Length: 52
Image (cartoon, rainbow, N blue to C red):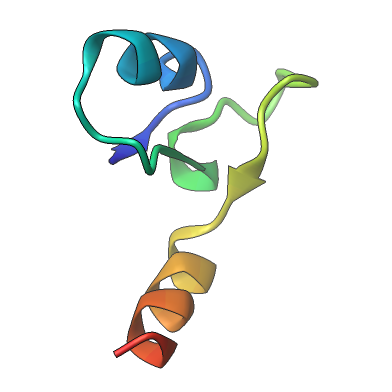
């Protein structure tokens, strides 16, 4: 599941998807997210393509 940095823990608690990723494209440029592992959509697309 692709979410923003404020939603990752909620998605893990309330959802049924175990693989929750925080997208850089959903972040605000002037805010820090010290508790989130932020990944870009481009990196995730490359990872998904390599696992096929």
